[in-house]
Image (cartoon, rainbow, N blue to C red; front, side, top):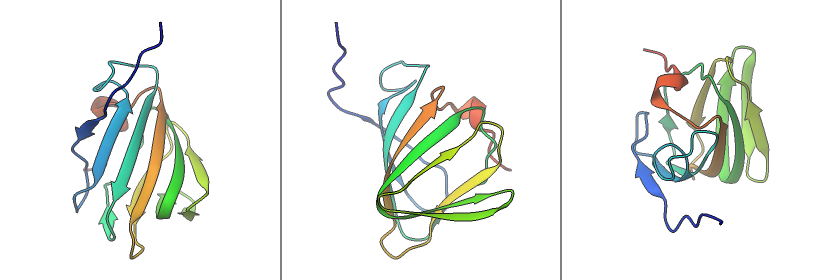
Length: 120
């Protein structure tokens, strides 16, 4: 039988400013370890610590710009674009634009605090 997810769980985000994370599918909201699906709303000027996660992350930007720093440079992911970051690679996400960003992040396997490995 299909599982209906009636509402997300709000998750506290890392970073210098409040960011809204609505987890629909994942370890917290649906007790799903295989994948997580979250809708993020990030304010202008938000930046989080760098990380070297043990999961792949697939991100679709719906509104604004998501900046993704990586070992070889910086990518600016615009609304209507997507990015894949790979397990074991160092990345840092931020939203430098005036409107912040609205995006969907999918992690395989599901996001977990003990597998994200954020910088100190």
